[in-house]
Length: 460
Image (cartoon, rainbow, N blue to C red; front, top):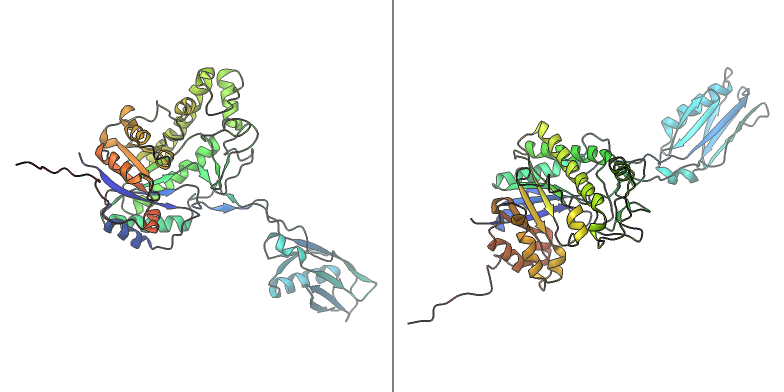
């Protein structure tokens, strides 16, 4: 059989999406990568944001007594006076209502609300920026007074977080761009895969949210930067809707949905306190399953023979997570295809090999394809290890038509192109180059060479 070489594009905070979807698809087509295109949506801003702890600055004005007819009440906001000439029937309550109407209609920096004789002035500018807006009230009377602070206060920036309950989960910009991109690919006859990792740039690391993978002492925060999410029901509920949203987008683009679990794993490395298995859901579920607390696994280099229960339990959570997503999406789109991206390089310890591959669920019967990647092996110039990575799907029972390999494009001294040729020689279903932007920015020439050697018959 023959393999196809495809290119991946990715939504990333470090890469611009200034190129139009149609132009990107045209580049992929003209470069000759007309097999299956991968579109990665990982530690990026594909989701809606919320800010539950943000507060707007405000101040309270309390009016007391009886306004004097024909007197003047002056509210000064940020050095700008707003006057009201007291009418014969005015009361403290009517004065408060009057300034509510005047401020809300005429001030761009604040709005106001009156409740009886109490006027609350609230900044329109976001969060802490409103804390320095000045406020003063003069009544010119001893019978009618007003008390207030001299500035608005209490504004707090809060923290932008991924909105875990938004419907749809994927935001409008990501849906529109991706739909247009897939439509363009469809027009060129290029199939596509959309991939999600476990990372959220604005993920909520709090125990209350319950979505963070956790070391024994803190949540797992990656240097992308992003939160590494876990396999709890809260995380599952978020991610299954994300995958369904993307399947919807692919259907709208005229494509059969093809979704990838992009490195859906326990984070590969320990911090100073241990491995990242200690979120509340994981530890409590282990406790109820085995009747004891999870042992502390200090390092990815730990001997798995010392932790047989943990090594049986942890991959099961991954398997349940991916199975839940597959089942949820296929309730709506039963034709949806799924694949797994698995990195043998960062799982190259006895422990990680066990905990990060759920053998019961990731089978040729359940997955369309198993794809490997090994950026570390490529960067280390270790083609022997890369060859082992390419061969892994076949060792796990995946035929050539269900096997793929992703190659990280690097600078010219790395053997990424030799690795590509090794994967092509193995007859895999596809070989993916990651990513289009690196390929274009570095400026590699085309067509890619098939090899540096040739055979010539020199006989008579």
